[in-house]
Amino acid sequence: MLADLGAAVMDADAISRTLAAPGGLAIAAIRQTFGAGFITPDGALNRDRMRSLAYADPSARQNLEAIIHPLVGQETWRQAMAAQEAGSVCLVFDIPLLVESSHWRQKVHQVVVVDCTTPSQIARVMARNAMERAAVEAIVAAQASRQRRLKAADAVIFNDGISLPQLRLQVQLLASDFGLSSVHSTDPSKLA
Image 1: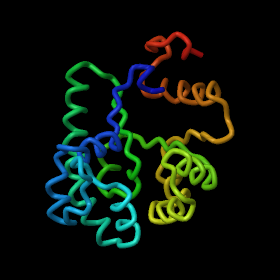
Image 2: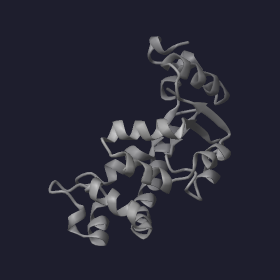
Image 3: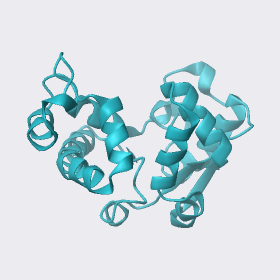
Image 4: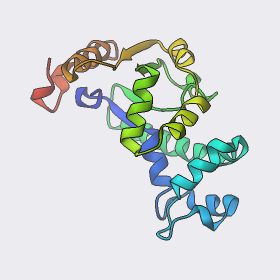
């Protein structure tokens, strides 16, 4: 929604998926660190197998993060520089593990947390990734708590039990603080 209002968005999850896709920059290091069994026949990261290992063994998760995070950071900053050079007035860094990361907070002006209740978070991940409840609960338990995320926030958008127009209104109100306006929207149906 912020992109619709003129922001440039750097999506760390999308970058991470690209790095771990067939031919991705992280594949060789993942294969070397974890073995060929963690690479699919088409040359991508075996996400299910890695997820099981990473959330069962904290050192494996740290090893994976040591491979992925620097590459994500490099690509994120490359995209940010390109957006600035193109004249973007607002850069949005969509960083799911921002609170867990020690360096991201110092690199951004404000942290916006999109919040929901923990049961909603678990249900959404189960639906999106077709995962079992126990697996999702283990992932949530390994991440920063909801309270910790809220404490780190400069602004909060509560996205639980509200309609899409209500969510859009919250985003538009926040966007004005970032120098964005609904007049920048590329989709007239998204104007308030």
